[in-house]
Image 1 (cartoon, one colour):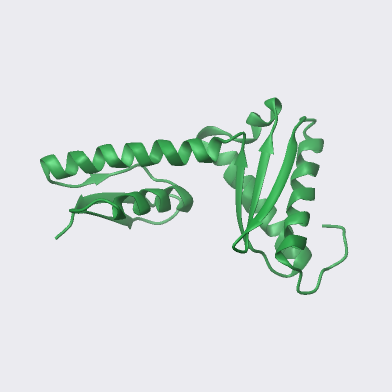
Image 2 (cartoon, helix red, strand yellow; image 1 turned 60 degrees about the vertical axis):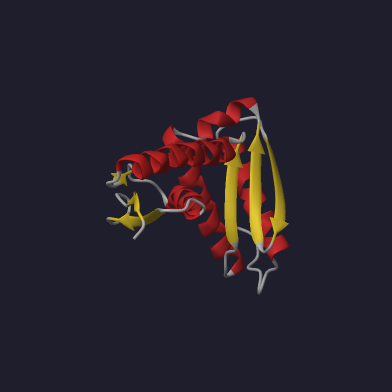
Length: 160
């Protein structure tokens, strides 16, 4: 954040700011790891890898989500705006998405077989999106969110 203010920074420049910040966090905690970035469709993807970096995931990805939010704030303050950003540490986010998809499919099958509704545990917006996107692919099922953050949860119900 000590660098010069960038006027109308490109997404690539914003990616560099985010990468430098994450590298600084690793150094500050004395963790060995690498950070790679890529930009796809104006979204910055930050991938952190290294044996010691698992500490930055936290329970259900809570620390990783907080690190993403702080990174987004740093980019916004340094560049006057922030792009969409995704952070993954040692593949945790991808494993979580796959596990949520499998869990959602099983719950949807149960709702189709038994009727009724199923409310999932409260989750962050990214996890809720995975559930909603998965449900959207299944005929006869719908999903909606209830509650307020941080206690917002997805409900899976029969459609119609």
